[in-house]
Image (cartoon, rainbow, N blue to C red; front, side):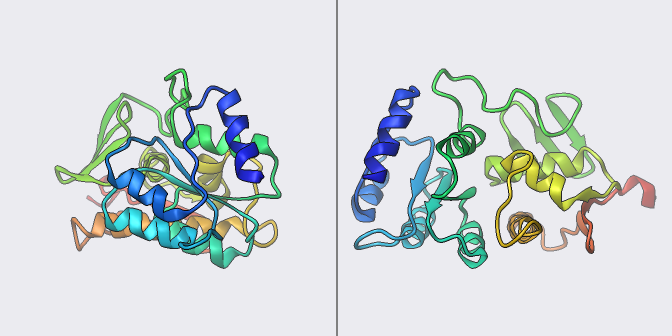
Length: 234
């Protein structure tokens, strides 16, 4: 009933929705080349779990953002989902308005307008910071001329950090950049820190897959992260 209710609510908001009761038909649908702007998964599904479906989507190199919507609120599940490439993790106990906001932050609205009218950083549409090039119009990042396969949320984090080279950015601000101000995940009010660490780890892995010496994202223990200011080192 929850899936049917959510599907109808999203359709009422103007979204085109295709729903599946099991994971395998959903995977076959995506593998057949059918376009999707977003996949919303439950962790517990018959036949194939949500995390298994997410792994299969990534193994088949299907480029689509994935959000988990589940009753499993423990931080270990959230970290596992983010580690395998999910862009967000929302508990079913949250309101429908929260989920809709998560969707708006992950994909374009039904009318084609960008989910966010304001880029994470400031400045021109295309900006170069050292070896990093950011195209804010297409949300694409390049490192030493090679494209870094970042998700939209990962791009927002890199853009926020790189826009302030050498300046520390708090965990909370990084988390809010993806989830919106005031949203809390994980265990307790500080649970969002684990979410940010997992996200930064995945971003670093993608840069290091292109450049094994990548060290531009630095940690300020207990506070947050910063983009290294190479000009200050010259």
